[in-house]
Image 1 (cartoon, rainbow over the protein chains, first blue to last red):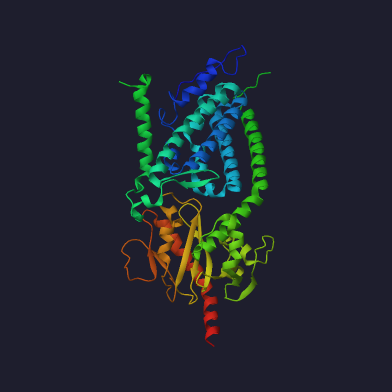
Image 2 (image 1 turned 45 degrees about the horizontal axis):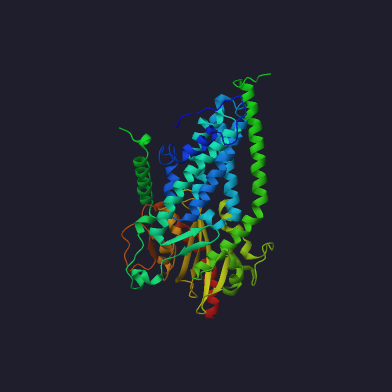
Length: 229
Length: 249
């Protein structure tokens, strides 16, 4: 689990104080939930075949994370210690059900593709981790920053992995509402007498692990603080 | 006054209030989004029925494409007698329209077949042949599976099929949804008696016309597909028999 940086200043601090900026920035690189803490990997591997799924998944996680952090943070002085994990679980689960219902109503195709993974946001370790480690001990303001930071940290990894996988796996890029845009000319493909073929391995989950691994490698080699002996 | 958060009474009170609030919020969300979800489900059903007869369409075009290919919608009872029929555009509010029969609900209710009615879609495929589409519902490994099986006018050869699922394992059982699986059904034939059709795990003979290969790693889902086809065909068989008899006379 990441370090618990409690913010308990009596003074009013500015919106973009050093502490708040740190809350936003740290999860993007130095304590990224996926590449450094290796949390939330299961969904990162499964739904990164297409960019549009990754976008919707990231937005859903971001929503659940921000609302969850705010609610838990507001209730932090009321939640009985002995049942706090259950309370957090109930809050996260209801938020996820709301997301699932909204997707089913407004984005039925994507809801179908994400299938069980929307429900699995409940068990996404990042969310429970942040509720337990941060929101339960901090005010709503910093909790929002913490949620945005971690949500974005999750999102950018998802987006990068899905862009790489979709380009090499399907020769296309898809965005919600625009559908899939195939940008390679059809006669480049072997099937129509060309030289190019999509890499089917990219579509399979193991390749997501490899791409995440490469991101971790690049990140660690550039940041000395992360290099372990 | 500081609250004693570790008091048992307080813990109970907190849980009760929490459950009430969460319950209300979820019930409200579910009820207010229901109409949209219902419409999406109906569109999807049309896409799937058309998919079973090899017509690709989108959710947006489903409503206009559906009446072009589906000439008549029948509902039959377990004896094979026609109860209701309608054609043209689907009216979601008309409970007599066989399209609005909820076969999934009927399956869950576990009522005997004699108390239920079953929808049958009489379609015209692209080359202009009559094709019968039968909805099938069953159980997979984790939850419900369903689909549509299209039979040619001889009521014996499978013209096409389309399956879907709620929560089968992605990569394994969930592959019943892919065309790769459903395409294998094309041209297969039903047997004379139950089991009308089987999904085989390993060692299927290529010349066997009454079965297809199951999905590796998705045995329970595959068995579910076989079971639902067999169970449903045995009900529709009564109708098919009376149809063939009347056309021979």
